[in-house]
Length: 450
Image (cartoon, rainbow, N blue to C red):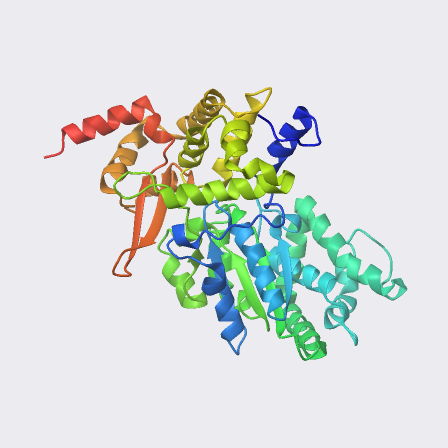
């Protein structure tokens, strides 16, 4: 029996479908703390406390698998730091940086643009002064012939946005800007720091400083066409500049750098990078982890609650939205503890129904469709690697294993045991366990075990 909701069935299905959008941050008020099933990982403790307790500017690196919930946690951190009295300048890098062709200069300009837009100074603006003295050199990159002194303040600020938009869209402008910025980087860093220091000095006494959060830099594609890696150039060769701002900074970083020999250099330059773990949905012994499943169900319920509170009542959740508790549990388990996969499974399930509830049949078809995506990502010679990991539960760090980890064919979990020792382990994604080819590779490997 359906609750008496004041919308049609089609409208309700559309609302539920939209609540599980896999590529958008979760709706406001739907955050769920998953510390207990992420090995006690907590963004306030991992990243926030260092900012709040340090008397000097900090620079931290943050990473995790695509779609695991990094942005959700950063937005939670932004709220925490704002409550603590910080001016948080958060931006998503893809709005300012061409992620398929990114260099350090692009990130520097993105930080500059977002600072200028977010904070208005009472006195002279060192960044606008910096631009004014170089306007003849840079105005062609803004695709304008207007003179600097003819611009109003808001137009001068807007030119940073115009420049970043132009260089993001036009490769030739991007290369030319980098060339010119390379000669001006020290002076731009000095102007940035003067801007930050002046902004912090003008803040009310209860405000504690500025924090820059540069999200989605982990999506940068690695480019080695010049004979060097742009990853190395940005995060290692330019580390003194990246960490040289006079405020707290958090940069997201490609996870490939974390799972490589470069991680020791990253740690030397920035401190230990933080990695957001996946939600542990099964135990090391292969049993379902009820705590992890319950957390994923709570995430689903928080989103349904925004539509109508009655939808999360057991009699409606497990009989009207879903046809049974088993269907809901299965979708959560087959996500592997990966937030984006969970949302994709939910939306795919809804695609296969005309009316509520989401049936076991629709859920199974969605699982098979998602499984097929993984099937195309696995070459036959990778099956033995996956089977070996399934048996050992260890990530061996080899190139093939790293490839499978980055493709989410392997999942990693962490927890603390009864002696408070951190345990980390790796396994194949639950969707892959259903492959006939994987089952054959596993059986072949097990038959050769002593």
